Amino acid sequence: MKDEDNVHDYWQSYSDLMAALLLMFALLIVIMIYKYASIAVELNAQKAKVDEIIGVRARIINQLLNEFKNSDLSLSIDPQTGAISFSEGIFFDNDKYDLKDEGKRYLNEFFPKYISILMDPKFKKYISQIIVEGHTDDTGDYVYNLELSQKRAFEVVRYILQSDIKGIDPNMKLDLMPYITANGRSYSQLIIENGKVNREKSRRVEFKFRLKEEEMIMEMQKVLGKGSTK
Image 1 (cartoon, rainbow, N blue to C red):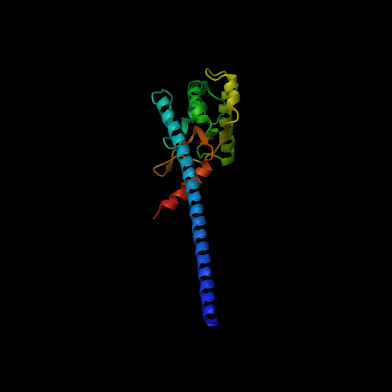
Image 2: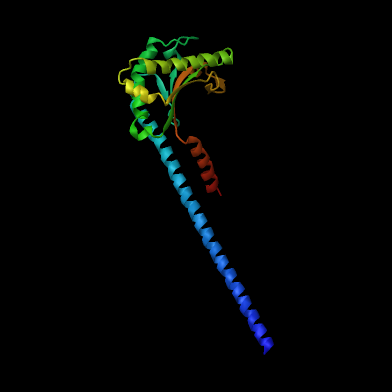
């Protein structure tokens, strides 16, 4: 009788142990499901944010293309980035950084339209920087060209902020100051065509905009891209 009790106690203890293990296993599954569900929700939220920002850039570019498609200004718009490029000769004489009268006329006509799009309330909250870039060709010393390109970019920004441009009042200039910057790129970004440097096109002034969290977006695109590959 005593042996039977021992056997009974053994199987009861074994059953209790298995029940406890099953309970722990079920609890672990619930925790994992909750964890991965939370991750999925977070990833979906991040993807939605990425899609939103990417959509903002596309809408800005679309408005820029529509705004300047019938313009008589000699400019080109990159349909992927929205960068707007002007030939160097429009703004400056060769090897000079004094803004020409023609360049001032171009800025008077171009910039109010450009900034009205970027500073529109529906886009402004996404804008991180508005960048004026000076570019040279590869003739001469890199450092000399770096200084020249920086001075040219600065002269464009100085004219925008300190001159009386119709459509840009003092309050708008104050609003613009935290965003706009001038960068000289020397000949670090030459225009290459058919394997050769196009020096005429390389000498240019570009207007670019940068969106907030673009680095995060690029990383997220890489992550999401890797996750979707099979």
